[in-house]
Length: 289
Image (cartoon, rainbow, N blue to C red; front, side, top):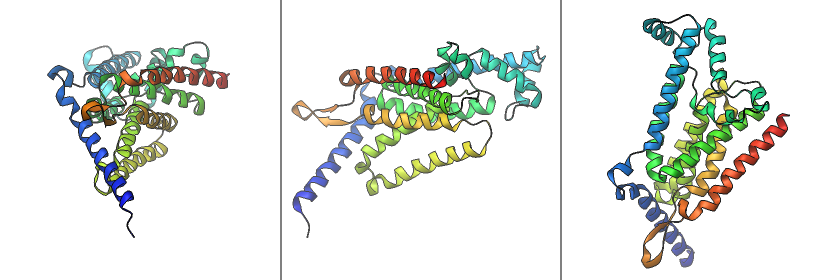
């Protein structure tokens, strides 16, 4: 026998989810044209690409390439797989400019919990990561806003490096993929919270995200030099931050929809998140010693 109160409750929750989902997707249209640009994503993409151009040039020069043509030839020859003769030069350059290297972090170079997410090994590495970041980042930044996007990206990136520091101490780690997995985790939680706004309760959307995550992690287990510890650390922390900071709209005064997760309302939680990340880094350093 159907329970009218239960049916009304489900209907109300479905209506709220759809209302919140539509408001979250359309909010960026209410901003000025300049504010609609996902400048956080593009700054990261452009900055990371410029850093890669610099480090790739330094590696080529270390291998004896000094003219522009020789440097480009070296970059293209190492675009997919680093040639055996370039391994040592690449490692040396990446470590010099901020790769995750446990011994150096334990010696006090704590900035290496952050800098690796802006470094990349070769053209394929930077290309795939920046493509993923452009596709996901521009959308998610419109959804959550500039500051929340940068908070999620940087914090999950740092936690991904902390995870690598603890669980893969011998690995020299670089790349934005841990932070990108953090964005995937945050968006997954947004979909989960608003699942009633999707057909079939969001089952297909969530299943698609699970497949994408599984494929990427599967490649990580099959391919050499891929740090899945960083990927998992970024994804799990992204899920947590997504639960706290992705938009959730509820009716306020005069039934005006308000984002209950906006930073102006949740700034104490944002500060606690930053403090918690620092404490996690301190704990990792203690375990590392």
